[in-house]
Image (cartoon, rainbow, N blue to C red; front, side, top):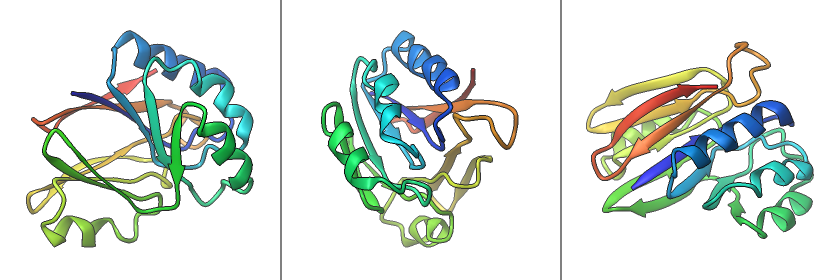
Length: 161
């Protein structure tokens, strides 16, 4: 299973369009969004995904009702944390980094995903893989990126767009 992981799109429609195109070209089976969509109109681009989207709200997602309504057309969004099991691999996803280490040390999750910092992070803590795909928007780093997670192998590739 190939999972696209994105975060911090922050209304940057041009970069989001490029990321959606890349995810479609890669034929991912699912897309996870670690928060900070910002406005409901980002769903105009996300709706072009050829697969389902699951995500959580970030700290900049003020219009949560509008986002939830629009995102329900193509998947689902919820408050954090989001816990999933895919291909026998347990994942935890949050927006802010504060609980990441605790989730990793708990031994309950093989993959812990987060966003918020806009900085890529790919490392192991104990047996858990910690992953921040960087930012879709490119506002802070100047580089839009996402992650491609292969399951059940837990192999990760960071893709720049």
